[in-house]
Amino acid sequence: MQRVQSRPVQEQLPGEVLDLAASEGLGELRASFLPKRAGMWAVIGMVFFSLLGLLAFVLPGLLFIWRLLQTPNFNSKQAAKRIHCFDHGLIVSDRDRPVAFRWDSVSVLQQITRRYANGVYVGTSYLYTLFKPDGSTIQLTGFYADPEVWGAAIQHEITRAQLPRALDLVGRGETVRFGDVAVNAHGMATVKRGSLPWSAVERVEVKNGVVFVGKSGKLLAWSNTPVHKVPNFFVFLAVVDQLRG
Image 1 (cartoon, rainbow, N blue to C red):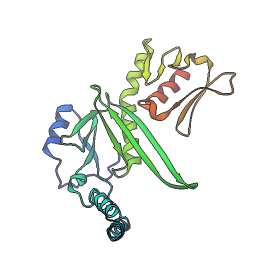
Image 2 (cartoon, one colour):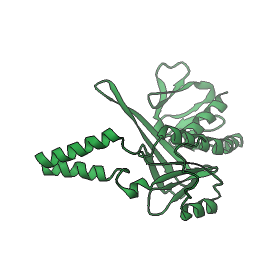
Image 3 (cartoon, rainbow, N blue to C red):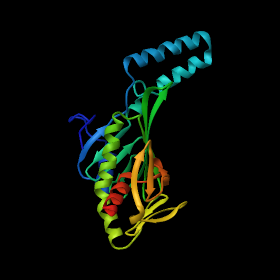
Image 4 (cartoon, one colour):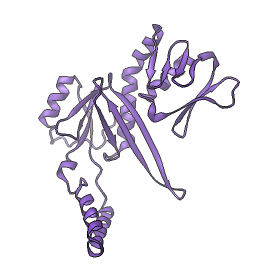
């Protein structure tokens, strides 16, 4: 995992983070990702609109001031938030107490959306929802810098840790579920469409954030499931690729 936005060597991790990492057996720290700070021109713009709002309409001006004070640039509580990635999991420090997730047991839902205004690309939004085995969840967004890096790292590490077990379960005749989609040695199934043997699966492709499964001899897709509804999406793709092969 690339060390991007990692803590300086002289800055120590908080004791509660170190204790949690040790108790969960997370291994060594790989990288820490910090909140994304607003650029100089963005801050100047927010200050300008805050003053303009106060002069024209008090409420909009107060709203801009409140938003400005919530940015990591001016809010120490927001600036202290972190994503810490370790050998065997990650710790998120954005609440009163840090929360740990192990790569071998966490589930993740990924939603990446490219945004356009009048046909012009204006940015990409990121949302990763992490689930612990006990059902507790946390959401990570573009609030943290380099979401394309830490998001890809989360998916990579989960796939590395969980793919062998998923393949082993399938090899022993069991069914592995990825949300509404289930796969086993014989084929795949969805809640709405029923089952489809591997011999009848013509293609599995991802377009515009949707997983399309094509059935042999059929023009239309047999099923289409949004990526953001498939837990551990890359584990799912790897298992399907192995079984189809």
